[in-house]
Structures are given as structure tokens and as C-alpha cells.
Image (cartoon, rainbow, N blue to C red):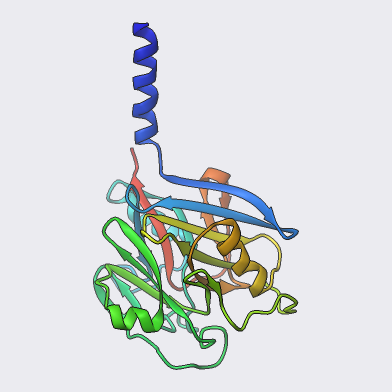
Length: 246
């Protein structure tokens, strides 16, 4: 009996110390996806773009190497928003409380300008996807924020411009959040997918009432739990979970 109680206590302690980043693969509408879910209460989500010398970080391994100097590491990462050729963000960008780019509210060319677009906002113990006009009106105090577009899901509804038979298909990635901001779900398609099916994944399978498209074609993920580390040319904004090395 004592041994059983001790075993139960040990399992409980191990569960509490385990990472709250859970990654898996699944299939929806004949498309395979890699999904990583983060508990924003337990885990530390941050945005990364430049190092202390204002040099673009650009790669998961560069961020991980910089974190190692302070006894930390990346437990998960993904590209997190559209950027210009010099890797500067196209839209609103805040890192560690410092605004590097203002909010872009007007429509424009490309996917970013396909309104409504949105902003992924990180605050202490929570993360939220805001439609851009709501973000402006609510003015949340985000520690980190990145603007991208289009929105995939807006208060439970799909973006009005998405069509079930849309022919534009790419490897796509994005993020969805729960209403209370505690559950953050990142997804990347492992085959080309259109916007409609990608948005349905977030609404109907991942059950996130608000979701934002990060990018397509250049989409990459770092998920050590699945032994996955996508390589390629330098990225712009990157979102990651930071944890202690030990």
C-alpha cells in the first residue's frame, strides 16, 4: 500500500515536471499535419527576430545556441509571420515589450492584406489570436506580438473569402488559441493544402475559436519531441517555447 502511494506520488511529480508541449501527427481531409499544443500557463512562449547586435537570428539552431548561454533551450519553434527580403516583419511586431513595427490595418496585396488579418499576442500566462481591428480597439498589453494574415477562424467562423474548392495549395502553418488563452495550438501541413481545409482543421478538429495563418511554402517547424527540425534559408519572426536546460 505504501509502495503504491509512493509510486502514485512519483508519477504525479513527474507529470508536473514534464513539458507542457505536446506534439503529434494527424490526418484531416486526406492531408497529414504536424500539431504541437502548448499550455500557455505552464510554458514560456517568446518571439525571436534579432539578437543583441540587431542581427537576424533566422534559424532555430541560432536561437537555441543563444539560449544555451543562459542555461535555456528551445522545446518547440515555428516561423511566425510574414517578412520582407531583409527579414523585417511586414506587419505589427513586438518583442520583449518593444514595438519594432506598427499595426497595419488597411487591405493590401498578397495573403497578408486579405482582410481580416490578425495578431498573435503573448502575455503572462496566456496567448491570444486577435482580429486586427479588435486588437486595436482592445489594446492588449502584449509582451510579444506578431501580425500576419489572413485570419483562418474568427470567433468560430471561417474567413469569408475561403472556398472549399480553392485551387491555391501550399505547405501552410498557423496558430489557434482557446477562448481563455491557455491553450495554444500550432499546425503545419505536411502536404500542400488550401486555405479552406486548413481553416476547417483549426475550427473543427483543433477546436480553436480564433486562428491565424502564419505563412505558406516557406513554413517550417522545430519539434524535438517528434525528432523534427526543418532546415532552409533564414526566416523572419519565429515563435518558440523556452525551457530550462536541466
